[in-house]
Picture 1 (cartoon, rainbow, N blue to C red):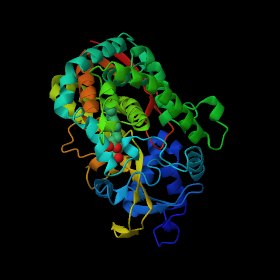
Picture 2: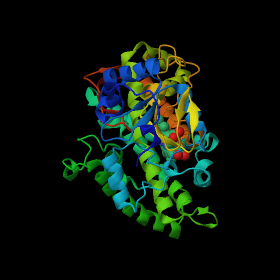
Picture 3: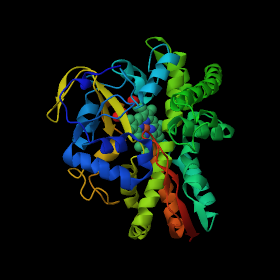
Picture 4: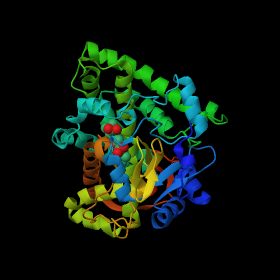
Length: 433
Ligand code: HEM
């Protein structure tokens, strides 16, 4: 598809910077991605990236611009094009296997008004703070078990691989209604779903193929759908009080939720619900290890943990982007955006915007206010944000009092992705109290 961007007058981002922002590899190294985003905020806060193989896209780096695009869901749609940035070949492959459409999954992310509100309302009250706070005791039990396992290492371990990956997975799968024996399968599928550009996360048969990412995505989705079809049928026959039963038995426009939309919902919750949270948890610990004076402060005053959680999520920004497309010609930061132009919302950049956050690169658990946009903004703002924050708070409340000492035992490693990712490994040395 050609966009009007190709003929409009617009500020074109220097090629090396544009490649950095788009390339999945850049997100494995803070010293590469953050200087590029800082350059853009300073010199070209809203510019066009023209990178071979990709549609030309607007790169939105300022906190205020990301918020004003996201809040206006009628003017800026998620899903007339792909809400996730792919190269043209991958999008073309998606269209071929999906009857000409890029809507490969009927989840909230691929919906616009009014459809989006109809589906979001099915679970919105389940995810509200007053409902989620009732889960605290249940979540605390899982946090205690996980912390006990971590402390049992008494020496060196990998905070991500031995710990952070599993706790949010257990929480969300338990609430959702996926049996514990299926958790490893959910973890593997999620890592494939989000890690399409990371060679270590790819299905081996896909690595050499030019549309590898698209093929792998389709194969992973198919496996998810097969799995959830069976669970959905079970919950319709015998409803329980889990989230899967709520979705399986919900009605939209007077009829039972259709198969694609039900499966889209399940996959969104099963995937978005843990990778993001485990990465933010690892980021929180990494921040504490880099600024260790905070550990004693938190141990002395656990009420500071709420600030730690918000700062961990801002500082880590595990979701690197979502796309929007303009539905009509409009103005933003003095630039003319044309109908069907595409915009990449760079959340890690908005969260380091010096106009909003003093010493933005610093991990500061007392930062207040902390109006980060790691959960997005507007009608699509993360459905699971209150659950994610509760999980993280409870975890740090259970972990910190037991730490006698903790230090980095090696360099952290990050997932190669420009979409959802973060920590792949965080080696630590730990001693319990
Ligand atoms: C959407 C971030 C945890 C479920 C999103 C979006 C972001 C995000 C950036 C897109 C927002 C937008 O387009 O404006 C995060 C982060 C998390 C987290 C940083 C953890 C720290 C969770 C959890 C769940 C969840 C725990 C579920 C249990 C969803 C869903 C959507 C979403 C269903 C789609 C919402 C919509 O389009 O209406 N999240 N998320 N997320 N998230 Fe999260």
